[in-house]
Length: 268
Length: 262
Image (cartoon, rainbow over all chains, first blue to last red):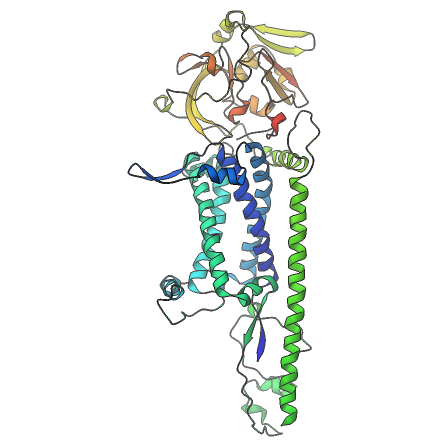
């Protein structure tokens, strides 16, 4: 039978969906700024693999000659992008969600298995809790990237007043390159993310909107005659039994991570 | 036994109902929220331009944001924070020329040039280049930065603005909030907050790479204000004035941030 399984807390869903348009606007307005001096390319041994960006790309986005507008948008939405990120990080720290998000010592080995599984090379699904190893690495990396964007952004925005930040980023030039490279990183992340979401299916997508997943649970109804009088001492949670509460195994999940019941009264 | 199956079915139905209800509520909220966000974006994107004044050309909320952000970052501004300097050898030999606004006046004659410093409404100080060259000279090799994103290490020399102020006893004027500078033909003009103008690395430059500044770089005298983007580094200064209101600024009238500080 179907069971509601709580997955994403409201704060996570909120920051996720706020971040989406914020990041889009930051990338778009960043492009408006970048166009004014589009010097970056990936060149090895004199051969240019990628030049950012081809002319049709700029024309298609109507990017040219909008530097002032790009800066104005960028310097407004940087606040929301940053605050949203700070809120997310604080929430995960306080709620304990970070335990599920941060890669652990097995993650890097397991992530490889996840990759093999996703590429249909390996059949067995690697172990996972809320997030698998690859997700842990990706979702932690994206936070590190966001942090990097804010830091490098400030380093190129106020290189004199925040000179130490510029220094930390390896100077103005390098900071700008990092800032740009991170943007490319977001786009790549986004593309993989979307493919994975589509592959994961509706239930997974619903969870980031509504917070819950629906799981199919095998219910085995056993026709066991339960004796009318049970010796409370033999039950695992003897105390609860005495009070007449439903008997359940003690959960090892910390209290703050335990799935909340949506509606206490209707609980089975 | 019959009763048991019924209750299992009932529970399943209840769960089904709960799923439906929660789906509806969350997706309704999601789409309403998304719609509101999109509406907000449309509003912002199509919001009217600011009333043209000292600043112009930007959408109203965006200009407000720029001004608020300026206030925030001016709090961390300190004249103690100096621009990083480089050895002379690092300075570019081919110094980039990015603009000639205010320098297209054919009637301009470098020999007749005099700097006008407006001390008060009816008192204007006239200074020629010889006099300026006789003041203590300061050199700076630093990374010149443009809003477009490019930067270049350049070597400039001239008199520090603070030294200029002290020499001509303009301390009273320097107590005001802003400095305005304009080209002789008035085609290019900038407004600076006084802190940035009095920054120890701000100079009225007359030399570039140890030579007198060439015409395209703003001969005979130009502003080098390292704590600002290039757009504030006025070429060919014609006049300097002081005020407590923001002076007009060429690029701020084109939608750029008035402050443009680094």
